[in-house]
Amino acid sequence: MAVIADRCPHIQVTLVDLNAARIAAWNDPDLANLPVYEPGLGEVVGRCRGRNLHFTTEVDAAIARADMVFLSVNTPTKTRGLGAGQASDLRWIEASARQVAAQATGHTIVVEKSTLPVRTAETIKQILVGSQRLAGGANGAGGARCPEGEPGGPPAKTFSVLSNPEFLAEGTAIRDLEHPDRVLIGGEDPEAIAALSAIYGHWVDPERILHTNLWSSELSKLTANAFLAQRISSINAVGALCEATGADITEVAQAIGADSRIGPKFLAAGPGFGGSCFQKDILNLVYLCRHYGLDAAATYWEQVVAFNSWQQQRIARLVVSRLFGTVSGKRLAVLGFAFKADTNDTRESPAIAICRDLLEEGAHLVIHDQKVATSQITADLGRPPDGSDRGFTEDGSWQQVDTPLEAVTGADAVIVLTEWAAYRTLDWPAIASAMRRPAWLFDVRDITDTAAARQAGLQVWSVGKG
Ligand code: UGA
Image (cartoon, rainbow, N blue to C red; front, side, top):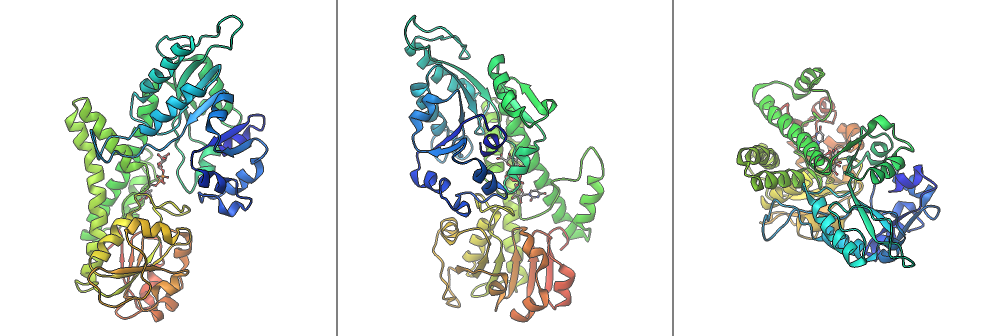
């Protein structure tokens, strides 16, 4: 929305949320305090905020004024009830659609921005169309437009529903939005499609704006994420085989990526995929496949997630086994906690599962991450930090420090879990002399200067290389 405001100064964009603290943070005069860390976002918000980009908790008033409403609420995996563990929880989408139905005035284009299971637009339409009936507007399926209200009365309340899934990745969000590979708009109402296309048309080449039906659009989003996640599970499966056989994952990735049908991107082996989307979207796909009786297809996709969990468990087991089968009471430096570089997001971060397993083994973890707050790590690990480093404890302990050098001081091992740029240029002689011997480097992102680490006296294990 910030990028839309930036590229379309004539359009007033209002972001609404019920969470007052969150909205206050978006309105913080100091752009460094925005609630989301994303390179370039502060500059965009700084240019537009107060001009044509507004943040407010006045949800009803903003809906009433809007010509177009983007539903961008959370759709986490259900934790209970029907479809628990796989299906998306649509309660916030439904609540938002009801609120839009109640508060909208005149004709409103409702855009699904959240990632949703296929045919959710149908639910949204039913809710909106129900309100049209109450308001005396059109009640045709699909939220058909009805321009005429009662003579002399307010204009009829009518809706069009579009699907416009988002393909940005965190850490590169601004660049992805400013130069998208494609913009996808699904829907049936040509005027609504034209209106949304015109917004993107201010900076996106029309050839990159794809139009599909609603269901294709919803399914394309889930499928794109499933393909990307599958690619990571595939490369990690090959990485494990490389480690066992003496092949090198970088060389293999380069060799296969040179095939233009495969392509070089998204072939970096690592601790497995994290983030709020991949696992959730695949599980959603699995649920849909089962719902339609396609059990073999469901099992196929399920395996991508199962393998990802295996990869995370494998890393923790491997660290323990290299450190003489026990990490109890040992200091382990963990470099990186975010699910990828250039974000403060830790949702489904592989670091969570790996750190939890190591804590279970009694390790003392000294965690460094330049953007993740201690309160977030506390929530993710389910326990507060304990900086006292009490030596041998049954259930492990952790603390967060400000520099990689503090993290490694007295440590038996350094474990690199996030590919922050700073970890590419670590001073290995200084690190080696601060560590306890024998000292290990586990480079789970394959980004460090392992030759320098070896030269400095460390024993080295790299993902996909051994
Ligand atoms: C992903 C998709 O890439 C976006 O297109 C999509 O819009 C987004 O989900 C979403 O649905 O919202 P995101 O999760 O932000 O974006 O980040 P990715 O760059 O896709 O990385 C996901 C995970 O895969 C990270 O843990 C990353 O470290 C890992 N990864 C990525 C690898 O292990 N190897 C790679 O080569 C690439």
